[in-house]
Length: 194
Image 1 (cartoon, helix red, strand yellow):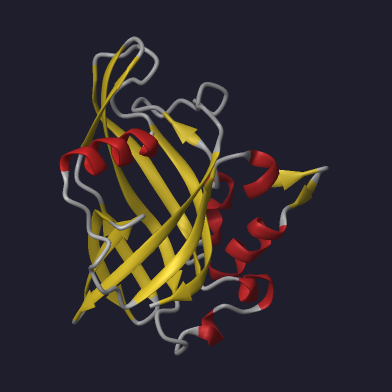
Image 2 (cartoon, helix red, strand yellow; image 1 turned 90 degrees about the vertical axis):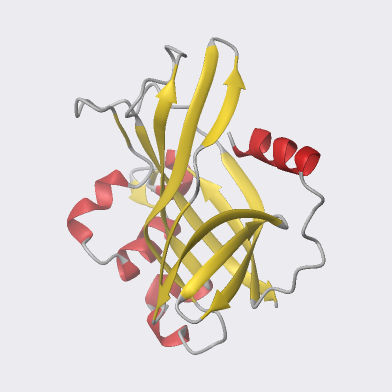
């Protein structure tokens, strides 16, 4: 869904390429089970890394899962894909602004190494009707300046940005995307500058 967001914002905004960021990360976002959960009956490296940093490891089965508003499992109905972006972070005290490929995407807070953020609601027109959705982070750890490297231990050592995002449908007239559907995606990345 983010591809449409990028088209809409790039067409509607003048661009933010000249905005100085405090840190930039090459980030991969996936809900493909063979990447974020289990492959060949074994936990993937990414799942093992998430287990290292996960604050409440009782929910590890939600990595890349999907739940409808009534609590039913919609994992077989959700589209599975992998996307890559540049996340730019701008820090002002505890507040964080997140740029997605240079465009404003979300606002949040940074406490120690833990990043919390939420996007505004985005509108996407799809075959079958319009869908309104937003992104929130369930848990994410980020190393802005090298001081959080000790948090990324074990399998998580390969990352500087690691966590779980959830995408929630908040409005829809599209039967394929019911209101209240929530899908989780793994986010992982390495710092590339800033």
